[in-house]
Amino acid sequence: MILFACLFLLFSCSQQKPTIYIVASYDEQDVCGIPQVEGVKDALKELRDFSIKEFYLDARRISKEQLQDRCDRVAQEIKTTKILKAIITVDDAAMQCAAKHFMGKKVPVIFSGINITPEEYNKKYYFLNGRTPIKNFTGVYEYLFIKRQFALLEILVKDVKNVAVLYSTDLVGEALKNQVLKEVDATPYKDRIILYPVSNLTDLDKAIKEIASKKDMTAYFPFVMSIDGNGKRLTFQDVSPMLQRKIKKIDLAINEAFVNFGFFGGVSVDFYQMGYRAGEIAKAIVKGRKVSDFDVEDAQKYVKILNLKRANEIDVKFDDNIKIIFDKVVK
Image (tube, rainbow, N blue to C red):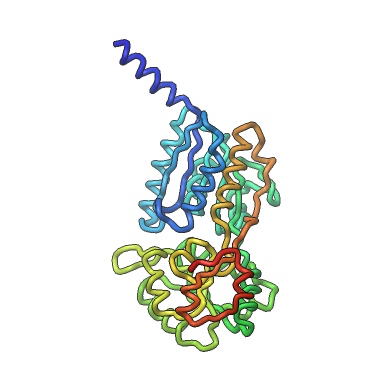
């Protein structure tokens, strides 16, 4: 009986720990989400008396109905937490889930890696005055550094003609396409963007053939995040080998993990640092700062990265002086 009582008290005490939830949009191997989650957790390490819990919504692979059901179940569990200190969301599906259940509530919500702009979200949720929070949400927007991407491309290739945006017509693919257009608006690069929306394998095959065959297509963005693959959802990891095999052009990677998957590279958002910054904001808030102390930020850090093997595969040559401009070279 004494042993049972001790165990019960130990369990009860552990249940009373202040809790921070990390809600990630995708699965535990997602190339966009996991570096952010790792950054968040590293930023929170000093909160030793806190319980850090993770949920993965798997939004790329399940239907909208299944996603909503999963969102509701996750939110219900969060709501039953006795000492809930903060929620950190990773990417847009998790942000939207949290907004559905917690917008305007007491719990602070800090987002990382949203691709839909804060201004667009504000039209629906009215949580910002400019970029200053007037409700309980703040965080970090995934700025893509597209103008820097083009500037680097011009150093590498010199005569940059057109650049394709090959994107899936899901939430994130559409958002990424819109980000590219927004970031190059009012620049000479705007007229060089060619859009290729795809929703299934038939669309994808057609777009691949056109991008691969066009002589005036210098490079492309591989934004095929989730498409219909004859009865199952195919993610970026599923289609990336096909893109690399069939398109022998510069694949512009906005994420270092894309380069590790074999794509060419370029100017990549530092996803780890973006998550780390969201974690820093959350840590400050649970220690006593207000959500309104932290304006919504653009991601600030990027890395110039080159996959040398891919460059050789697609016959892009540079001398050693050019290689020096990269922060990282993957061989």
